[in-house]
Length: 156
Image 1 (cartoon, rainbow, N blue to C red):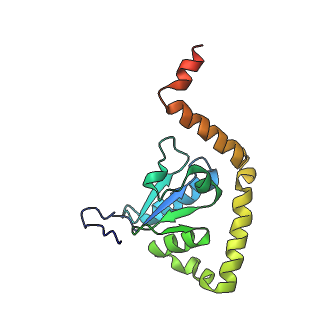
Image 2: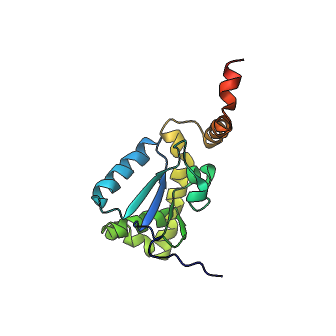
């Protein structure tokens, strides 16, 4: 069964980037991309570190998955990750030449391996807690949001 999106429901963006808003390097890239988008709305930016991040509204990509590797979503629901995210965003923002070489199979594989190496260590490089610690903190935060449970515990 195919679900079609009516024109009224179609997003105005061409790609939705999920990024870590608590990562200084990620923020630098988002600021650069925002400037390149120049108010055209081609890229929708979603901060997965924000307390109101909703996986259901973002391809079902949960916090842990989004924090482990960069992801983007196309209007048709296609989920991209790793170097393909950068390749698509840069193409949409008329800078596709920067990542064009990664379309070649060998170079693309090397680029993904290098990105994987970086992604596995980016929290350490930016002097942040490891992924397991961030996920545990997020789960606690999400639990606190349920019926103000933590506020009650704080008063005990």
